[in-house]
Image 1 (cartoon, rainbow, N blue to C red):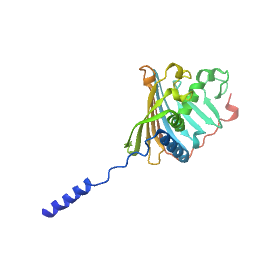
Image 2: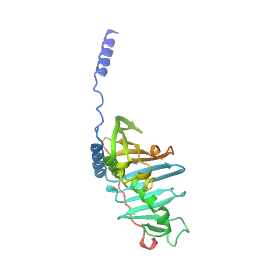
Image 3: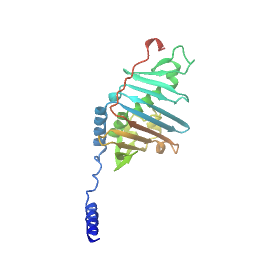
Image 4: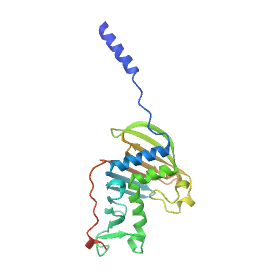
Length: 242
């Protein structure tokens, strides 16, 4: 019994003297954004799932993007029914609902076609928001770290950062869901939460725009997984694009 008690005492002492977990890696928003951007670039492609809740609008998107975010394939219910969107070679393609056009695909442009006029800006914003480099650029430009902690997200070790973004410092580079004239009309600050894995790659980003929309719910949540998974995004066949 005495030997067992001594062993237990040593075990308790050893546990009490264990090193505390290291603090989060970054205390400065610029350093955080630069490191996460570099990790995102070296991490290459990834899968994503985005939930958007802005006022009465609810939509879900999922897909993959290639290295550097230059290519992307996404399925979204932004217009109330599933729609496929592809970003390839600087062009944004959308597969229109059946019977809505002469051909199944359109190029989303700044032109005068009805589809682009109604949805072009929103789809371009949504596509940009899926790329973590977009939010990281906003953090670099207008962010201040409020708190940081080591935690886990879905069983994965993570660093959790709470960042405050100053809308006035963003200029025209706005989060999805905000119209271009928001800076002049709204102003103010809003919180962003960022979870990074051990390699500083984003696991989840949450933008809460509610504080600058006068109490209306406005939240964008994007989750990332399978960094480095191969992605092959091709433009639609030329004969199918109207």
